[in-house]
Image (tube, rainbow, N blue to C red; front, side):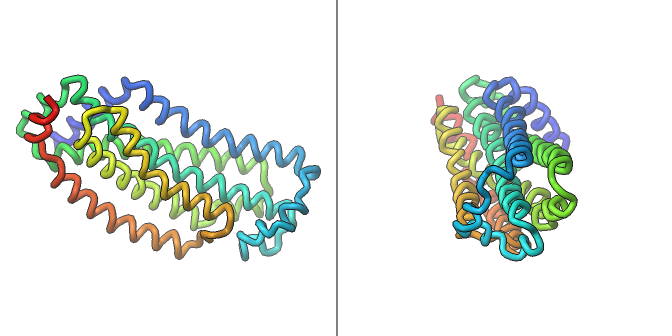
Length: 265
């Protein structure tokens, strides 16, 4: 355990010197928090003149189904937007650890700090666990903090009825449970990619491919192809547990420290 703590401390000291990592951890949550709050302000001020009937006629309000029961047209439109904004927060636990994990291996090799680390008696499992935790924890904390700020801000701009729908247990499960599982998935994928390439930029670019399925789900939700529910979110959580377990195993097996040292010289 002490070795893992040492790796975590080392990772945070090294990784956060990188400007791209700092931008991803600090500014991406701020951006994804500011956009929905600004949109809520705009909708509150100009909602009456925004032609809500057109959105209703297009059938997009039917996407929410029973969640719109008892709500007027304006509130239903606002809820539709809030659900999309909330889904955007799922990008954070994927994007942030990908950047950290991708840099933590190939970035260290580029700065010649990986060789001394691999020469220590630490096991591959301990090494990768330390790197994974160092990447996952900032992502989870940034996501939870950004979502909390979002909820506090939304509380001032929506009705109490809408706010209760916004804090639906479905979203609590998504942010608190699915979010960390997504973070672990992205870290495992990034570690596998980072251990096979020799350029930090290539590692980051390839690792970000893991975001694409999440983007597709967000698009599907916006057009009504994917209808999120508590049952579906729980099913996704169970599936991610299985996938994470497999990727963790593969990450350790594919990380051949001796080969990395000889191939990257």
